[in-house]
Image (cartoon, rainbow, N blue to C red; front, side, top):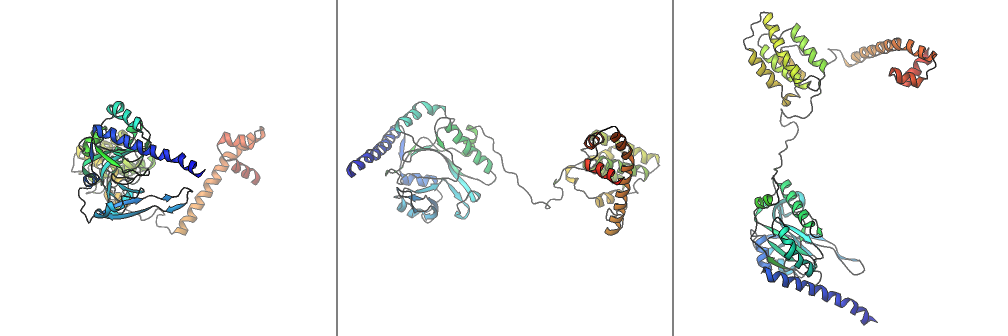
Amino acid sequence: MYKGFAEQYEPRKNNLQQEFEAKNNILRSGFLEVAPVDYLSMIFPDKGHKDELIVVFGTVKDKSGNVIERGTVKRVALEYIWDIAWRSNAYIPYCDFIKNYYHSKTLKSIKAFVVDCDGITSTRLKKILKYLWSSLPAEPTHIVNSGQGVHFVYVLSEAVDVKGLRWSVNKLNETIQDTFSRLLNVDKHPVVHPYRFPGFLTKINTVATAFKVREPYTFEELMKVFKLQPKKAKRTEKKGKQKGELLVLPNGRRAFFEWVLRKLFMNPPIPGRRHNSFFALGIVAYKCRREVPYEEALETIPMVYEDMMDRNLHIGFTMEEAYNAFHKGYNPKYVRASWKYLCGLLGWEYRPNKRNGRSREEHLEVMNAFRLVRKELRKKKYLPQILELKRKGLSLRQISKLLGIPHQTISGWLKNI
């Protein structure tokens, strides 16, 4: 009984190993096999014997699913890397990291791009090489027979630094994997993902092998072949570091723009501030550009200039200089200019707060009085109409919809009668 049970699984193991050897024979017939030591030194040419590599160990479970060894990340010196080649759960990323700390945010440079295709049989591999190979934009530089699957590797002639090119690196990795996914089942991974290296034991008790297809690419060549444009990351400054930085959108009202104009017409700026007044007008116009069109703001320049000329003021600059000053102020970097700054440009008196010198308590008292007056005026205006509509048989909700007054407000007014 036990012997028959074992025989059911023995052929499956042999078949997997036979498939592995069949794939090796297919690859040997067309490509040059690379020794594991040479492959490792090609990927990490800058590493000495004492330098450490990131090695990721996967979780190991028994047949019942119990965890024997939990996954972890270790740093192993290059001279001892082959001492762990017997472990089928050891994987190495094709990357370098800042201070050898394994994380996507500490990614320093990329050595190669890898496409992981699982479940590739010898028949399927032969079909790929014979019929699907020509449809790829660029051949991989190496093929790694990793056990039941195959890795298609695009090795770079020089490692590419990720700083400033993170978007381009990730986009190229995604594009390469998407290209293969049209032909095969691809396990898509980020660039920092670790893979089984040639010379390491596989899960089917074979040793992974590598084969050279062609010479390595440069990063620029791969970007061009896969029709991608490099996009360098923009440097961002902290808020407040750059005074002219646009942090908010223009939200000034038309009434503010018109008020500044009226004040300019009635009280022209003092000598020494008249040229600056056009610069200040440009700032105000940009602040209010959501409600004041640019063409309309531009038409106010000759009005202000001629008004100064009619008052026989010695301006000291031409109309063209007034336009130039306006355009200098009509700029997003001045959108946060304060009222104190504008008063300094115009030579106007600056009052430190909107309460016009009143204390907070005095200001609240005045504003509450204004609010009560406005409320009574509104009630006096609409109450006769409400009573008339009520006599005609309209409901409170109908009256509310007709006059645009909240239902609760109308109800309160009627209760107080």
